[in-house]
Amino acid sequence: MKVVNSSICRRSVLRGLAALPGMGALGACATSSPTNSAAGEDVIARLGVTKLINAAGTYTSLTASLMPTQVFDAMQNASRQFVRLNDLHDVVGERIAELTHAEAALVSAGAASALSIGTAACVAGTDREKIRRLPDTEGMANQVIFQKSHRFGYDHAVRNCGTEIVEVETVEELEAAINEKTAMMFFLNHEAPMGQIGAEEFAALGQKHSVPTMIDAAADVPPVENLWRFTEMGFSMVVFSGGKGLRGPQSAGLLLGRKNLIEAGRLNSSPNSDTVCRTNKVNKEELVGMLVALEIFLDRDHDAVWADWEGRCSVIVDAVAEIPGVETEVQVPAIANAVPHLHITWDYQATGMTPRDVQLAMREGTPSIAVNPNVDDDLIIGVWMMEPGEDKIVADRLRDVLATA
Image (tube, rainbow, N blue to C red; front, side):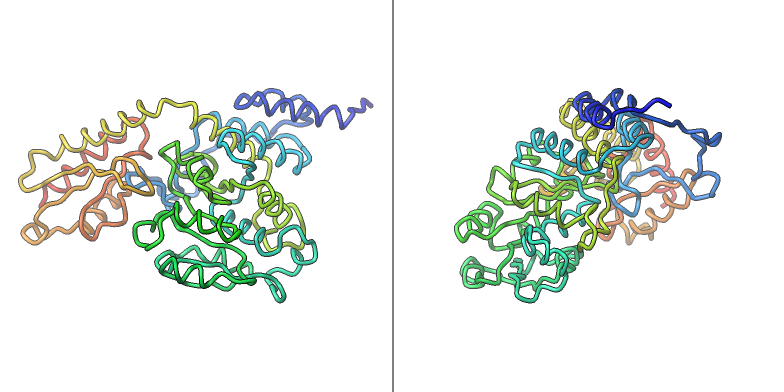
């Protein structure tokens, strides 16, 4: 029987990470290979679940984005071997921090997971007893300051650490709210225009009062510069979704920021047992997949990608241009999902067809097409998650549906 030295195997794993996205060196320690004859089977088709063209965007309910082939290949490669998970967390975090100009980084189980991990880091820190007790925060600093307009459907990820949310609206109220029980200040970038305190001032206030600050920028890539803009602005921690614009695993996210807080976050989450974020498990596949996705995103020609998105909009605009009363406009949101979106309007009352009617007609056709669900005013087409050629399919279907009105 041949005995392989485990330390040698570990070293080859760590060296292999430096060669991502190829991941070839990771295969050196593989001891098995898949034998399932059903490898590559289209299980979704076998189960009869309806597939769709994503003309909406990176919505979790639509399974967000599609991973590049290199990401999938790296994850598949990693899935066929064992490593010490904390070793992999260490080197992947170091590499991601380097790429994003941050002190430290970790891969989380999605953006909401990063919110919980960052919060736990601020409340329990590295104190093992406090970590074990969460969400029981008796005797701990457990208050998190929110601008009132920044309360949102995901703040449960902050509250589940046993925190008390303190709502403020002005700078004066924020400074008055800070006390010995304050653990963190939270900023929701998507709602930045709705609050009275802007991002830069919010980060500066945290630094002034020595209170950690966390910003949720889950859907704020692209632009690529956002990957380091918020840490350079002074935020202690920044949260990004992994499965949206970065096109990594949908079950992954990023938490970037100060080294001491990232280290505390690691202790408050998987693979450590008896922690509030033990449920937020990230395995080797998500770790390497998220890293490779980030590397691909940073290396791509962003101008060329943008031009392609604009071209897709043009295909759809041209298809509906001759339908009387139909108007189109390409808009780019100022914050969150800041990519070209095609807005389409017509006289809903005169035609008897609403944007919701068109949404349903697009969904029920073959192939099923999902458009942006926010259709109360305009019909919105998100082109950035379409596969090549799907813009023509969407254009033809939309023209046919609108022509019936």
